[in-house]
Length: 119
Image (cartoon, rainbow, N blue to C red):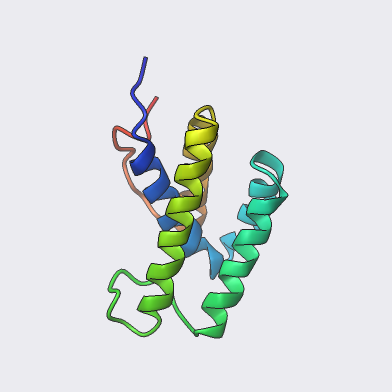
């Protein structure tokens, strides 16, 4: 039985979801979140996208870059949201791993699965 690191899954979900919010993967991710986790998550992703567009933020690694504060705030909000969901429904970890991996592919990221993301 694999050990799931809830905090790590939440953090990785947050980073990937916020990056996708301003990318072409947004449309796919929004539909997927609605279907697999519930309509509220799609609505939250839409709000994230609108806030980031309003701030003219771009998904970058450096929080000191333009829009970095908005990005950091969104990542933090998503991390807390996902961690709460995993606390209430631990079985969502498997779903989130799948969504993280596919969203990463759609973003063109290649990242080996870490211990929190492997089965």
